[in-house]
Amino acid sequence: MKAQGLLLVLSGPSGAGKGTICQMLREKLPDLAYSVSVTTRQARNGEVDGVNYFFKSVEEVKQMIAEGELLEYAEVYGNYYGTPRSYVMELLNQGKDVILEIDIQGAMQIKKRFPDGVFVFIVPPSLDELCSRIYKRGTDSEDVIKRRLASATGELAYANEYDYIVVNDVAQKATSKVLTIMEAERYRAARTYFIINEICHAAHKEREI
Ligand code: 5GP
Image (cartoon, protein in one colour):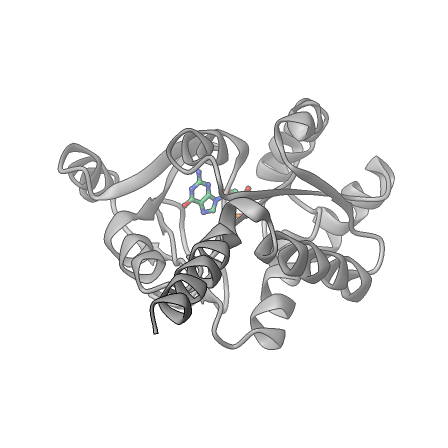
């Protein structure tokens, strides 16, 4: 028997650096499956449909919700975002590790359905740093930036709902911390108990011979 894949959920306020960490994890772990979300927000410069997101209309996303095609969904900063169900379920059933980079509302929905998922909350070293990262990114309008900053402090209060909190001061270090978490999670007794059954089963067979 093989251990089930890990369902890794990364959340944190806008500007915490989840995207960078996610990218670095994917480079380090080429087998890690990244779930591409659907969204109704406009594509930013350089974003590619099917790679960064599946860009959809509100009607299309509502239809997906009605047909149960999303594992979770939420309205974030005035747009819908959601995780396509079939891709994630297929990979988890194959024993692959899957990463979701989603907001807190979505993460809480996933936690109810997958209590043995690994929930990691990424935080910036300070609110000043968060603010300067969002401005430096330069991908959003002033209005959207203000909304994202206003949500940040409220979002930090949810950190307690997660299994781990990782401060992202230097992205590479934060990524190593997430890798360590994943490594430790693989050895959780609840995930590896099947090994005990296999050992006992083998011993039983030996005695029979
Ligand atoms: P952005 O517009 O900056 O790409 O993402 C805005 C927020 O939406 C981020 O917090 C991001 O993690 C979250 N998000 C991205 N995809 C999903 C998703 O599939 N579901 C949920 N609930 N949130 C998502």
